[in-house]
Amino acid sequence: MSKNLKNNHFSDVVFGRKSIRAYDETCKISQEEMLEMIQEATTAPSSVNLQPWRFVVVESAEARAKLKPLLYFNQTQNETASAMVLIFGDMACYELGDEIYSQAVEEGKMPLEVKEQQLAAIIPGYQAFSKEKMNDVVKIDASLAAMQFMLVARAHGYDTNAIGGFVEDQLAETFGLAKERYVPVMILSVGKAKEAGYESVRLAAEKITEFK
Image 1 (tube, helix red, strand yellow):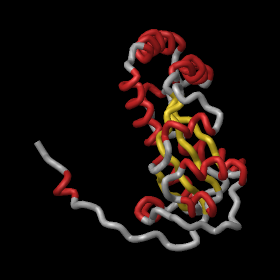
Image 2 (tube, one colour):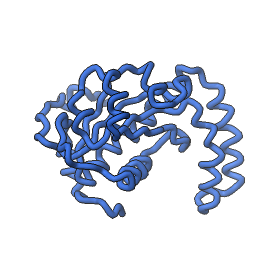
Image 3 (cartoon, helix red, strand yellow):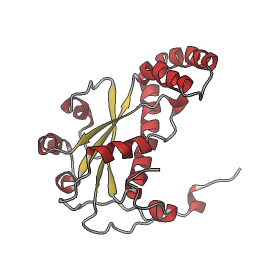
Image 4 (tube, one colour):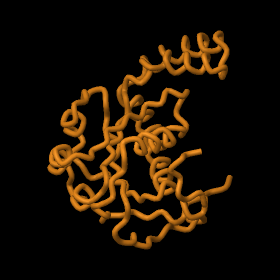
């Protein structure tokens, strides 16, 4: 259990979440707690557990200044949030496959022979993916971690806003990542809400669902 958990009420965490645009500028999230939230967020599922999500936490004035020209809108979030969390998908995530599966063996969660059998199939399979297919896989998986981060942050007493309006082809390089390997998925602002989020509407389940 997280030592920083402030809200463990499922309904409030999930259904009380709102997109926040203005934050309390005096609220700072320690790097220790940020890592804790990321660790908790990455209990999200991923394809064959290759965990392709990668995070860059923008918190300093210098880093915010670098991010500013890459945001189409959402400048208030960049200026007031405790941090802007950049989420990328690693197109070469399979390179960590052996490390991930070896850890599972060491912790008694997977027999060695199962690790060897699975990696023998998984690694060549991932290496054979087209760029488009790999892009889809890592973005789907990283989006699951992003959604979980938003809920985890709320459980820690913070609020968030998912941001998709940014200059995608410059984000990785601006923050020292290889753009061919790390594809931007989304940006999350996180901090203490200064104002309540807007109420929004959702389409009825009957309108978006078919039973066959």
